[in-house]
Length: 496
Ligand code: TRP
Image 1: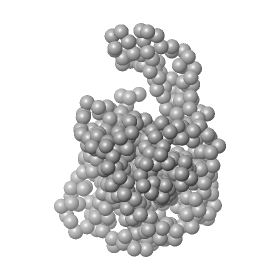
Image 2: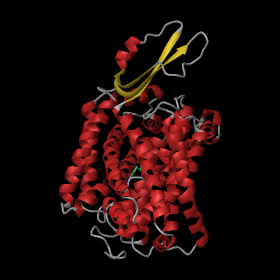
Image 3: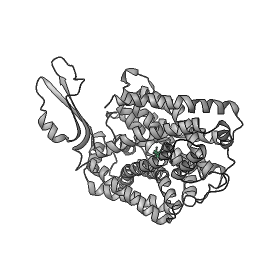
Image 4: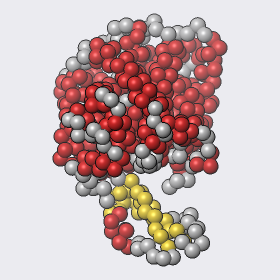
């Protein structure tokens, strides 16, 4: 197949469409929901700095590599990597990039849809006026009540899967392109309104300092691993999503500038979301480290007290849902495109793939209620209350345990207190994908494009006139990105 020929899946209509689609993929729950809450859990400023460094030194270079691979072969990531591995004579193991990506896609889609379901539910919650005048306690209680209801969560998870599947089944060109053109600008405008509101809150500066003051004493190995993982997650990298979108990109378009747009927009949205949410968090005495509920608990307080809050709040959660949808499309596209290349119809491929992801998602639904006690990687550590020393060598480790049973076993006394932490099904999938599979995929892609494709081959595909930038990019991709990812990985192993 000639490189310039359009693939079997269609092609983006215009020069801006790829930017729109890739930004639609990148900007999603990762920016609005995940970035603020993991920043809160990891102590703020220093974490943000490491995250920005990861975007620049690993994320952006790998994004360019992914897009050029996709555009060169114009096929699903699985077939693209197979063809490129043959063409370059790289070890057969690199074919695995496509397969691992498809597997990550199933896992990510499964829990992503559950969280997006929360956003859908919040559209109705805010629109009904139930959150008007709500305070921190009331908002927290509403969120807790939502989590406690597995049937409700399943209904919204199912609806989100259905909506996303309906768009995917129609193919990428129709539905998506037209809607994104309107939605992305509206999302930006609403964020500006919220940002304006947050400036009027008493906690704005405290939130700002929390995000941008670099206190390195708060930085742990785990937070560095999380920062790296999130830089891949937020840019949709390491599993072929952007590779699949690159496959639909017109042949002539120069890649460098395109990529910079996507990375910049994604980063801006995350930082603005962070400033808004932490302003509200500190103004209302919320806990920055309160976890996945952070956005869902803090924003309704703002909407509940600002003029026009019901309207703005409703529109905002609609936009969050749509931002999630446009991201979820790209998570599913690699697997769907592969099935279509196998000769299966797009409709049947969509139904099967979304069905499997929906089913795995039920595990995440239950993680917040009935299965909350069943956790993996459970560490028990012991704190000596007399000396204040924490047992560095964990008292006990369980690969899998019912933490309620453990809590009954390790009873706190006046002399010692026990700290029991593990990962629910949802936490485990999130950790496995973001912090292991995506960086590993990114590492392999960097090595593949950096070391197994010749400079000429790459240059032809990137199609840039900016020699200096090309040289810098290729150097970073060959040396800096892989070494950084490897170092973080090796350090991360110490966590186990
Ligand atoms: N980047 C999206 C977000 O921030 C999520 C996403 C879309 C994604 N496609 C992906 C994450 C591929 C990992 C891999 O919400």
